[in-house]
Structures are given as C-alpha cells and as structure tokens.
Amino acid sequence: MNSETKFLLPEDRIPRAWYNIISDLPEPPAPVLHPGTGQPIGPDDLAPLFPMALIGQEVSAEREIEIPEPVRDVYRLWRPAPLYRARRLEQVLDTPAHIYYKYEGVSPSGSHKPNTAVAQAFYNKEEGTKRLVTETGAGQWGSSLAFAGNLFGLDIDVYMVRISFDQKPYRRAAMETYGARCVASPSEETESGRAILAEKPDSTGSLGIAISEAVEIAAQNDDAKYALGSVLNHVLLHQTVIGLEAMEQMEMAGEDPDIVIGCAGGGSNFAGLAFPFLGQQLRGGRTRRAIAVEPMSCPTMTKGTYAYDFGDTAHLTPLVKMHTLGSGFVPPGFHAGGLRYHGMSPLVSALVDSGLVEAQAFLQTECFAAGVQFARAEGIIPAPESTHAVKAAINEAERCKEEGTKRTILFNLSGHGHFDMQAYTDYFAGKLTDQPHDESAMREALEKLPEVAAE
Image 1 (spheres, rainbow, N blue to C red):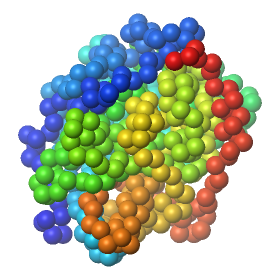
Image 2: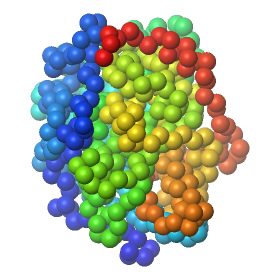
Image 3: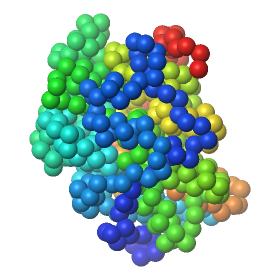
C-alpha cells in the first residue's frame, strides 16, 4: 500500500476532550419529557438508569468535556484509528473525486462502539454500579460493552434482538468470551418480553423491544444501571473522538472534505464523524454536505415523522423528539441489525429537520454490492451497516465523474464484517432480498404516537 494512502496520528494525539455540538446549536434541543406528566424531566428522573456523571453529560451545553485519563488509557489499545485514502476504489470508479475513510474496525470488538462503551463502563464503576444491562441489534454494541465491562469489573447482561441472535452466533460468542450473558429478545425474563411473546410467539424482535427488556431489568434492580449504545446525547458525545481525529488527519493529507458520510441507525457513528466538522460550520467555517444513510426497509429519517415518541416498545423510557416510525414499528429482519431501530437520535433528527444534515436511504442488495466492490478494491470487508455509507460514497464519487468535478469525500467505515459473513454468503447465493418498507405498519404505529402538549 502506498504510504500516502494511510494517515496515522501518534498515540499522544488521542483527543483529550469530547466535542459537544449542543454548545454551537442556534437553539437548544427539545427537552426530554416525563412519560407520565409530559413535563421536562430532571436528573432524579434518570438516576435509576444512569450514573450522575452521564446524566450531566446528557444535558451539558459545554463545548468540550474532558476525557478521563483511565478512558484514554483504554483508548490507547486501538486509538488513534487510521484514516485511509481509497486510491484503489478511486481507480476502479475512474472518478476525479478523492475518497477517504476513517476505519473504526480496528477496535477490539471490530466497530466504533467501544468509544462510548469504555466511557460508560468507567463512569458506572466510579459511582458503584455492579451490573450493566443493555440491548444490542447486530451485536457490535453488546460485544463492545462486554469488552468494556470486563475491563472495569462489571457484570454485563445483553438482550440481543432475536433475528440477530439467530443470524450472528459469533457475536454472541464474542460477548460470552468477554464474560457477558447474552439473551435472545423478546425473552421470558421480563414482563415486556413475555407480553410480546404472548401476542406473537415467533417475533423476530426489534431494538425497541430489547430496550424495553433492558430498561425494565435495570429499573427493578438497585445494583444495576442501563447502558445505551446510540441515540442519546452522551453516547454521540463520546463518539466525537472519531471526527476530532479525522479533522487532524485530513489536515495531514492536505485536504478538507466537501462531503461527510456515515450510516445511521441510532445516529452515533454518523454523529461521531460529522459533528466536529458541523461544529466548525456552525461557528462560521466552510459549508459541507453531511449525509446520514439508512436502510429503505427502516427509513426513519426519510419517511418517518419528526415528533415526540418513546424510545422503546413497552413505553418505559422518557419521551424524546426525534424522527420516528412509531415505537410499535417492528422492522423486517434485514442483515444490518444495527440499523433496525424505529427512531433516530434527537440531535441528528434536529439537524436533519433544520436542513444541516441530508438523509438518504438505500436497498439492502445495493448496499451489499457496494460493500463487495469496496472489499475487492480496498481489502476490508465492511459490516452490513457500514455498506450503507460505502454505497453513498460511491454514488457521490460517480456523480463527480458524471459532472467532471473533483470533490473530497470522507466516510466512516464504522466496523468490519468478519462476524457477518453469513450475510455475504446469502448475498452471493441470491438469498438476500430487498424487504419492502411496510407503509401500513408505519402508519398504524404513528397513529399511536403519544399526545404531547403544544411545544
């Protein structure tokens, strides 16, 4: 590989503070509401689920929040993560565009998720938590929290969406190797899980259902807290190490991206890359296109409604204003399990609503085709979720060729696909199908949106 294609920062360049985009927004985010009263919630309302340090970060408007040294010390296992220029892909596409990707698959669990898992485990350990309970879709978050929990001596319980539990046995094995317990969701262990199974015994599950189970367990046990791998402000905050490193690496490359791209299920890896660049723009810097990419089978941003909704199926969570397909919507069982969520991060949703972020959606098979093209050119097999960002980047590069314009494209390759090879096997065998978005199911779910007083 040409030495010019890889841009590495020295270890001492790991960011010392996370970037908080709330500080640069023209208006504060919509408040989180109590599901019972409909009034803005306070720290005490969240205390049964999260340690106070994370609650403070969730509502903070400070631009920089210091990264604790024990967290940076764990980050050193894989950070700074490399930035690559995809020269071989550029040659295959015969495009004048320059394509760069930030590669988060170098982490121990193979994705961007440990950036927040390590931080959440640290803060919970500091406040005396003994056990963390969570959900996971594709298993990248579950394996990342299992890894982090082991480092800080925490017990980890993971409720894994049933379809992914069956499709991705090696993700389960990874969690168990790190010492976590992995349960297929919906399960018989919780009231919310039993209610779903009573209504639909063959339920494939969803992230909304798995969240309900994890929140129920955490709320009922004093020694346990809940950990979330995406969506919430503090999770997106922790992921900004990606974009902060990428900004410095792009300077090393002598370029500045015109287009910044990330896949989006809950919004954390997109935000992690894009928010530091968007922060520059909000402070008077140059304008860029920021593209959040989702699956057409679960088109939260491109077809959903921007409204207050529950983050889970059983309505145990507070109400947040976000793009949503309705908390009762269960996406079909496509392979990008990390993107099978009915809602989107409130911060990402607000930026989409304002026009600062552009949303795109693609079919499963065209994303896998892009992933295969990328793998054959660059050598890295992308996770199914990451193929959505690859597809968008290829589209933009091809547009540059058609228009005869040179643009610099940066995307987040948020994880490798080494645990997802059955999906690629199914793709090559022609068994991977494009499951249509269920418009009627979405309309039915949206009819049940909670009533919220006029904003």
